[in-house]
Image (cartoon, rainbow, N blue to C red):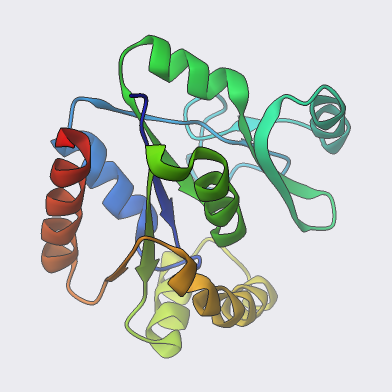
Length: 187
């Protein structure tokens, strides 16, 4: 059976760090590169971190039914999962791993059902999340404020995921992730 693992979390929860750990630990996983219309941050690279496309191109792909799921997170800021990306990974006999926002994670779980393990990464607190976003140094104060407000709402969806991992201690969170993925892949 083709399988997928979905990681979702509020921005700043440590989701991307845990996804990278999973990819380093399990060679049978392959990262699904999402599409987005936002600008690259820091050292992000087109076709490695995201498929960076224009809002017009994104809307064209919507009209072509090219996405498993997509979300307009903010005005003209789209994120989505391409069907072609999932098929490519499955054709390589790999398990797809997603790093997506919370609503995207819920949509993917509904789409893939029992083929999916959905993991919600929760920060220890909103205050800690805000501190992490500030220390990340990639967003201005207004963007951080918006992300924190969004995080409070997103945390209310944690119950819609198969598992919640609280990322207070990174080594402990990595251990939980390792056990969850091992169990899911072997079944």
